[in-house]
Length: 172
Image (tube, rainbow, N blue to C red; front, side, top):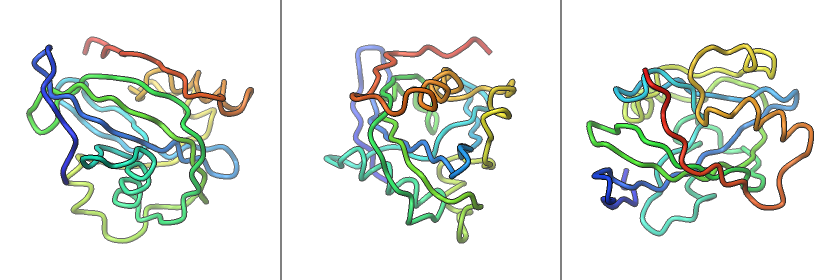
């Protein structure tokens, strides 16, 4: 897969990405477990790098299909924007992400996604209820996900995406 990247002044590759916060009808969120030498194991929303010139929502939907097999995720508005660092395929990266709201039925990924999981470093995936997520001691991306979901449930989607800025990794 081709990504839109460039090297920044910090010696990291800049990468554009988009993800979808997939919620089921009861409010559970779908997350994937990745492992990174810089971050360690962490749970993240489906999505990933954008192709050159690709629209953020189109990229988020494409990546979600590639990682779940779901072609019927109903997209919603952009919720959050953030930047974070990690190491992708041995390359230090600063990723700029847009996260969109989405809805879908609760189910497992569809089809043989072995190659996609291996390519994207997905170890496993699962649905998390709000209570399970609130009690999660593992690393979540973005780290404020529990609070952001609570705000979303209480206030609905923001009129404009909330810019979380650059969020540094917690020390391992």
